[in-house]
Length: 64
Image 1 (cartoon, rainbow, N blue to C red):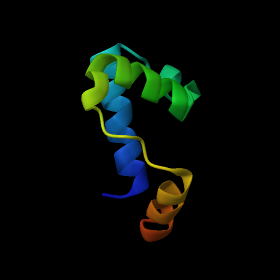
Image 2 (image 1 turned 180 degrees about the horizontal axis):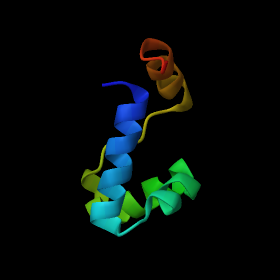
Image 3 (image 1 turned 30 degrees about the vertical axis):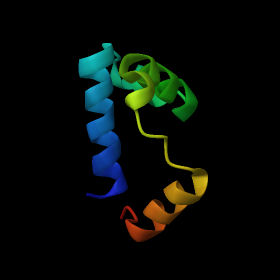
């Protein structure tokens, strides 16, 4: 799965679980999305990826 596919899937999940429109998802910061998902999942949620991990994923799975 590339970054675009993963982002699209996450956008769909935000719409289904949170009632967010695609525009609301793309305007939200990662911190805002994390806060909402943590509130829903409680402490069972895994930590979000770090900037370094995101950079590694983007390098490993470039869009194009």
